[in-house]
Length: 149
Image 1 (cartoon, rainbow, N blue to C red):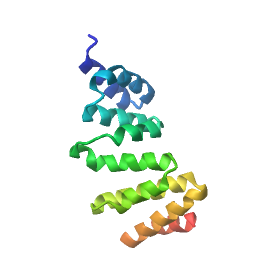
Image 2 (cartoon, rainbow, N blue to C red):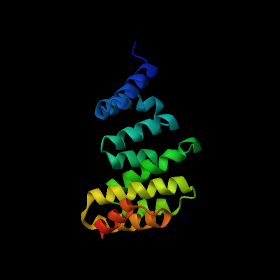
Image 3 (cartoon, rainbow, N blue to C red):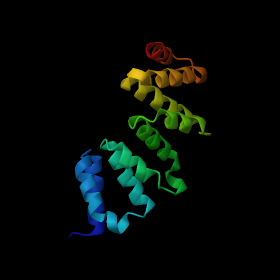
Image 4 (cartoon, rainbow, N blue to C red):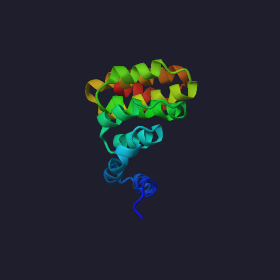
């Protein structure tokens, strides 16, 4: 039966199979009905970002208001900032984090993603690896800092 819950189940299944483009099509088919709910925005925004559509994913994720999404939200928003060439915002997200565990996760994401992107992004990779070294001495952090410098 073609129902809203059925379509959401199909979209979730496609997302879990990493078939993001098909999942987005299904989400788009119920967006008019559910598009204003935080649950829908979370699933749709993450799916957009996971598919590589970081700008649209960021736009959707930035509209979330429920506190229940805040812990994972910062990681996805940081990833979107990184992939849309907005390093200052990604770094600002890290600077405004009060949770030490989330701080470490954000630094790792910033360091690794900017290292992979290379070019002028090495500056942010080096900055993040340097901050990671201050939190925890590690040869991999040292190697990352040296490699990015």
